[in-house]
Amino acid sequence: MSPVPSLQMNDGRAIPQLGFGVWQVPDDVVTDATLAAFECGYRHVDTAALYYNEGGVGRAIAASGLPRDELFVTTKVWNTDHGYDKTMAAMDKSLGLLGLDYVDLYLIHWPSPATGDYVDTWRAVLALQEQGKTVSVGVSNFHVPHLRRIIDELGVLPVLDQVELHPWLPQSEVRAFNAQHGILTEAWSPLASGGLLDEPSLAQIGAKYGKTPAQVMIRWHLEIGNVVLPKSVTPERIRQNIEVFDFGLDEEDFAVIAALASGKRTGPNPDEFM
Image 1: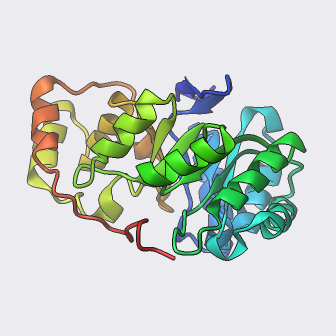
Image 2 (image 1 turned 180 degrees about the horizontal axis):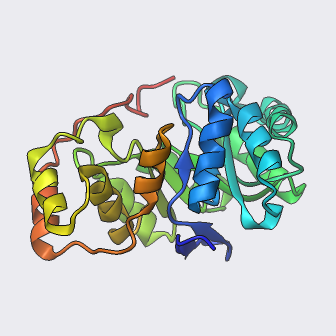
């Protein structure tokens, strides 16, 4: 039984609030790491075509013996596959690598606004949902103007928007828009790619509860309502990252974490990234 609670998406389906991210995990490493995550109770795994590890994730799913309906699998279409026909083909390739008939969530990985193709890509993602190749549909790295455009032009809300989000970059504008429209916010790089692990104020909060700075940040994400995707290939850290349901933060903790906001990114700005 997984200890992870679920959140309801705007299409009525549920998503485990804490998932296992596999960005930058090589294909020959990701299978064992994902199996370790499953053993700890994770049931949500987030991959992407760009990660070049969908095959390894698929091998872990097959080896786990877990019923398919107990798993929540996300993958994403990459920028070079934007456009209707390319997106349709990209999904078939991803499903083949994963060894699955469908994914639970398919995302546009980046808006890549300079090309202007993300509306046609969204149209394809909606068609893939109609075909049963994905259960739910969403986006990643979309700022408010990108979200407004797909909603205005096609009239369908994504179930979530996966963005870089951590105490340095709390994404207040995106989170407020998403909350207003019933879109969940999902955090990638939730620990600032490790950049905040040595932050003294987070260590002080952790000392209050017998927790690590990473566990404090994951708990912060959970309590502000984010879906969160910590990543590790170390079994002990994979286990620690899910051991966050036995404590809670207080108002003082939230004030300390809020003071860390600086706007610093660990990845590219979606407004500029191709």
